[in-house]
Figure 1: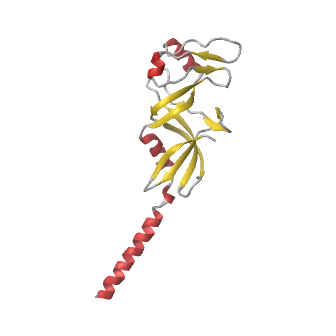
Figure 2: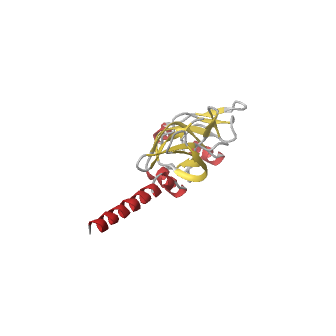
Figure 3: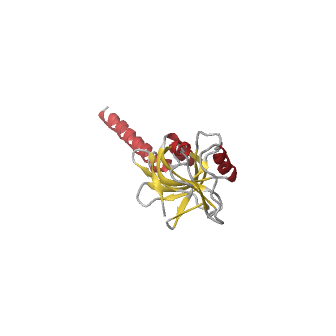
Length: 180
């Protein structure tokens, strides 16, 4: 009787060990990542989102910013208080990159547009995820999430997707955006 109970306990412990090992860091998947990223607001401080020409024009028509000053190349569209209330943080830049762009600052919900790749992160139980991520704005000028710009060699770029660092501590969580 004691031997049978001891054997049963050992089998239960072995099963639990196998289960816990299987539930460790191997449960990182894109569905879970999307839920984590979109699940709660994320603090963004001095990140940039890209605008289409139509969104830029709509912003002018809706008094979010002035018409861009035409200086033969790079120009600026000055923000209004209405745009600052939406958490746009600095004037819209036009002409120095392929699309107009503007800085944002605050807590934002995010939308995963496309996950490009993932790889092991800098520490044990961390992952780096490259993904096209957008910021939804509650305004008629922005029917789709505005794509975030990525950073490469210390510079914001429109052809680079953001890099997100995930860590595992009793479950995966988004730690921060990484600026390489």
